[in-house]
Image (tube, rainbow, N blue to C red; front, side, top):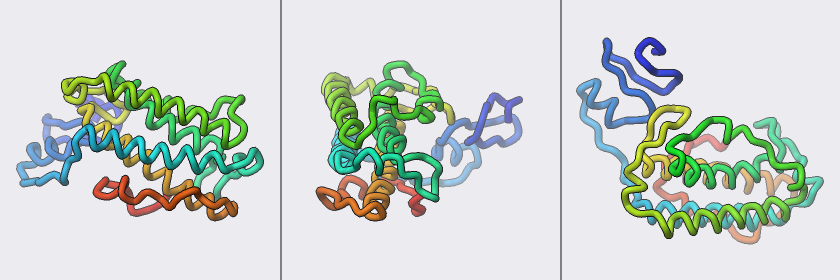
Amino acid sequence: MERLGIPRPPGVALGDRVVHGWNPDGYAALLGVSYRAAKKFSPAELASRLDRVLEAAQKLTERFDATQMEHVPSERKRTLRDLTFHVFRVGLSFADAVDRAALPEEWFEEHAPSELVTGADVARYGALVRARLTGWFQGAGGDEFARTVQTYYGPQAADDLLERTTWHAGQHLRQLYVLAERLGVTPPAPLPMEALAGLPLPEALW
């Protein structure tokens, strides 16, 4: 795969022909099979859903105290503090990636800054992220979503990256609701299922 120019999965090769990155249309064309993609949401719809996910994460995160933020679930060795920070970093990564035409994996390996101790601290960071994204989407032209971003898993169209960003944040929001129940924290509102409906979320929670 490296010889054919694929530095890491995913990718599909047939002889010397290759498709790199998550590209079902390209895979189908390469293999000569018919394929009908799932319904695609408009960038405006995805932006609205992403903000709804981040809003729910912000309001829930506010309810965790400093002790609860150090909880580490058995399913994934990551503190709740790092997980809540990660949700907002995922959202912010979309605008940063399109602006820079690149999405390095290192962004998703960042830990919460030391000054973010309580849930309220991380929630304030989340509010800043939401404000940044709101301004970005308001100023973005349609051509922004047709750009190609070189991600760590292959080249992606910006609109496809926005869909992935939305369900990625949504998947972690599902986890936060489960952890809140375990810790005896009552969410301010039910999980916003309408923001997740129709997105290609994994069946498994972790």
